[in-house]
Image 1 (tube, rainbow, N blue to C red):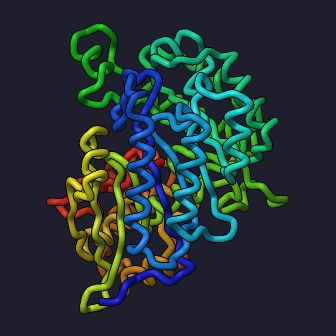
Image 2 (cartoon, rainbow, N blue to C red):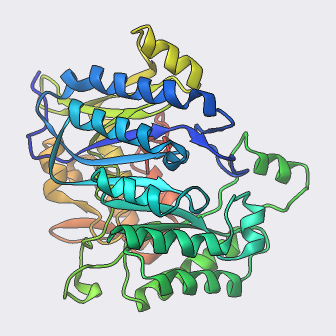
Image 3 (spheres, rainbow, N blue to C red):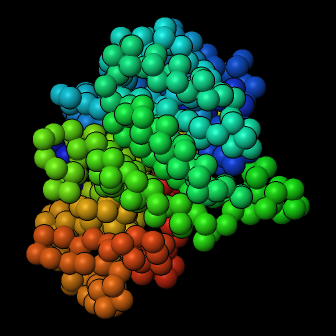
Length: 421
């Protein structure tokens, strides 16, 4: 069966660094604190896994690299150099490849950012989360407000011209004034990109236990909605383009923001996920998604996830055993549904008809006529000759909108569960 992609199709490489100085109480990613003795062996295993995956891609170029976690910048400079050397040895990077590293303000300095720049890293994603000291304490962050300013200044000094800042809103009892102050401070820094997420109480986290035992109240969903709508208005006024449910970016050109479909500073790696394209995940718990054609020429996918516990992952790599713990084939119908579900997260671009047709060899109306008709009647989507996208109302009810496109037996796609953002 023929493989689907052409050499120029976007293809993402995600590398998971499962280490933090301290794990935050709300985090359900596959990350661990206090495992410094495993850093060296884990980096060796990551490099070995990359070398072993090389033949799977052939000469296909990688268009984006995202090193996330965890906190990749807890690694020593020599380990970061080893990691990036393995990337270049194992894969062909496309010209202009976007290379992102996640960082936390409490684990970086000027020398660390200088090291990353020297290794070809051209984008940073810094986990700020809040400019309110009491909120940082509640979220279990290891940094304070001044650390944020020092880290941002260090990143600019090192030469980074593409910086994302992460924030969380919708904390229990968070007031509008607090969130507006955080937004104002973030905008004053002038980052190229902002990722703003509503706090979710995930099972098997300390925050979940706090809520379950009454130690803290659950987040107020209505208030979170008000904060989100205020964010949309504030960032639009500041010239940022709202291109994905939780992401805003500068347009990066002389075009007025209202005329920009996809801003220049949009995260190209995350667009791979939202456009239901292909990616390879390296590291403990990392997820991968590769696509091919079946006998009828329809798109089918294989996706898998790696073993999560770090010692077991390292042992499997060292002993040349399979690192995959889970794998499944995604048939044409589910793949189409996921293209719609993920693509409708893209606020302006939505799901492009031409891209859907090229990927699935059919028109979306052939499969989803009823869903599209109902959602349009309910004011949840708008359609034209080029695309289907959500309205403001649909944006605020995104989960209900997306679920209509999935088969009843399907579970939510793993692309957004893997921490690969």
